[in-house]
Amino acid sequence: MSLTFDQVGSVLTATDIPPVADNENEKTSDDKVKDLVLQMNTCLNDLQLLIPVVRQLRGLSTIPKSPPLQELIDGGIIPRMVEYLTSDDSTLAFEASWILTNICSGTTAQTKAVVDLNVVPIFVGLLSHKDENLSEQAAWAIGNIAGDSTQFRDLVLNTKGSLEGILNLIKNSTKISVLRNCVWVYSNLCRGKPRPDFDNVKTGIPVMIYVLEHFGHDEELVIDACWAMSYLTDDDGNLRIQVVLDHNVVSIMGPLLGHHNVSIVTPALRTMGNIITGTDQQTQAVLNVGFLNYLIPLLDNGKESIKKEAFWSISNVTAGNGAQVTSVIESGLLQLTMEKFSQQTANVQKEMIWVLVNATACSAVWKIVFETGILPFLFKLKVLEDDVVLGKLVLEGIENLVKHLSISERVPFLDDYNHMDATVCPDLRFESCFYKVAELFGTVSSMPIPTGPTVQTVGQVEKLKSNTFGLEKISLEKISTPMCSLEKISTISTIPPKSYNALSFELGSVNVDNLEKSTSKSKFLTTIDLEKEGKNTRGHNKCSCLKLSFLFLFVFLFLMTIFMIVFVQETGSLPSHAFSKLFHL
Image (cartoon, rainbow, N blue to C red; front, top):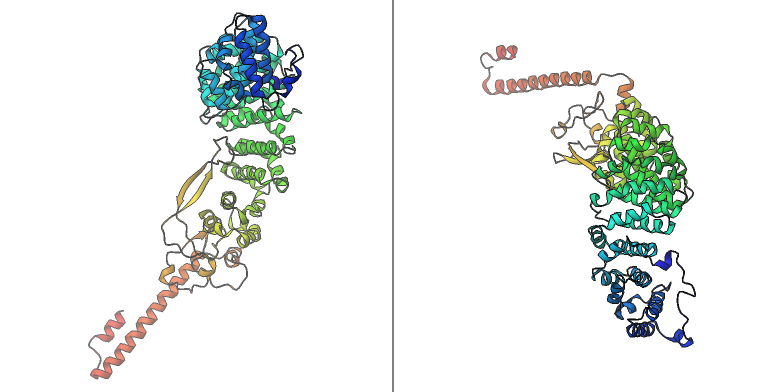
């Protein structure tokens, strides 16, 4: 982010710019620049004449709308302004620094035109100038350069003394504008991806803590300091997070979540959310300062981005350990997620779904999660009908809970399952997560018998390690899933044909190989009735095998009788020992 000096608060006064002739207002910006450059070249050795001309050039660079920055560059003033930075006259150096600062607030090409003249080391040297106005202006120029791109940011950081000079100004100045400027510069030095080398910026962490503790009344300072912390905690490896945690930043950020200024709440929430993406211990450090209680009012915030980040943060807590999932339930946030779901936009709902599904993935506290009423809620989510990606996620949440239930405990959810089965997105029927849920309820609706040995399914939801919304981390595992509808199996006779011999899958103790044909509308009635009546399905199978043995013996005797009759008709006598062999059999 780059700003002109005038945009941030300095307003030109009548004494700043000498009066111009009436015909000056009729000239174009290009003409004005050319005239001033010509005047500057005629009074190079006379500071009394030179400074007013440079001041007028600075005035052109601070025009609020469409300042003629390119005209100033084309007029060739940059080399001259860089030269004036080292002038013994601090006023001339200040005006030149101001012009270059404003040019660096333009496009990357315009910023590059200044940077290419090796101006960064000069600005860094001015940070320790005895004239505080000049050192503040130099810091501003550095901030605009660093805010233009990560390339220029790293150029500044790799310039010896740059960060040290900025931090020294913060620690030693009593001028509020200097503090605001330098904290903003530091946030620019931490900003951007790829992130800067942490070793180059971590020395500023205690200084930002100092600012937040001693200048909390100044909202502009707090905003920039919080953004700096959010950039520093945006780390996939958790090392940066731990360094920031060691400075006790969470105890400061927590209360800021209740600030009336949403511009403060946003970076404070992002900082806390980033820390939660770390280890369970790092997550707990955030919870220990009452983070969940601070979140509750934010769920009704009028700004969508605040609600989205709040639920994103909760989803990373529910991806933690059992105690952390329990803390979310005890705070009422899991219930609020379900209650407020229908009122939110699709972007917010996506994060809310992650809150719920992550909670179901913790086997240690599945029963506590189940008792919140989450299962029927998941069954009725609209995304199951029209969103394959989120639908798969919801199905995994359902499977996470149902697999812990006994057959009788699944009975109350049959209607929910049937409704889902009737309305589910067609593409979801081909996903392994759908088969797994269907298997738990005893059916996979109207799907052919699989020919392949394995299919892939979404594994347990892992904790999000990326701070980029929409990038969920999922592990994949391979399973072998029988895919056959109960309707097809239920029409199989007591002696199933060979093509069905391998289809033996169980729900608890109920084997569905030998279920008899059912005329009931419910696909699950036969299975449920077996359990309700207490039938032993293994005994039922054993009885079927006994019947099969008698049938086999009957067929054998029948064939032997036919053989004897035919033999007698042909030979007129029975073969020797025929009856003895038959009796032996």
